[in-house]
Length: 134
Image (cartoon, rainbow, N blue to C red; front, side):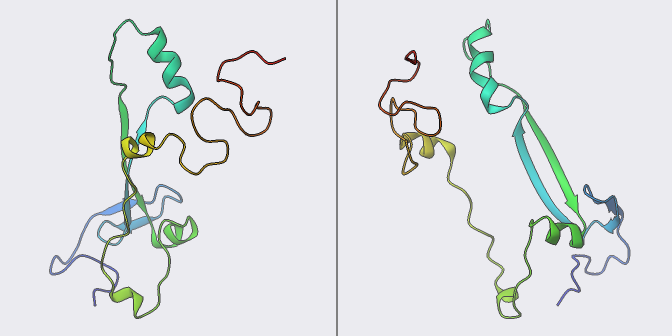
């Protein structure tokens, strides 16, 4: 249908570099992935909020548009190969639910999840969070 490109009548497009292997790949053929990450890792967010002078300071985010060549996108599991019939399906993959909805469930079905318990290795199941260990 399109020879793996999105060029349609342009003749030539600029090349971009793959973020993984630095291969020059046409921009319309490259697999694009838009990533939004917090600059601060999740473990340190609370520490910074406690030490901050401002009551409600929104931490900045890191926005990056990643370009992959086809071979790196397949190898890095960004995309998967599909059967001939499945390639006709053009619906985008399902989006993940918003984090606010995830926080409303208070742990969900995770082991040790729920309010006030610490499960897992080294944790005391049933003890309140922040209680001293004996």
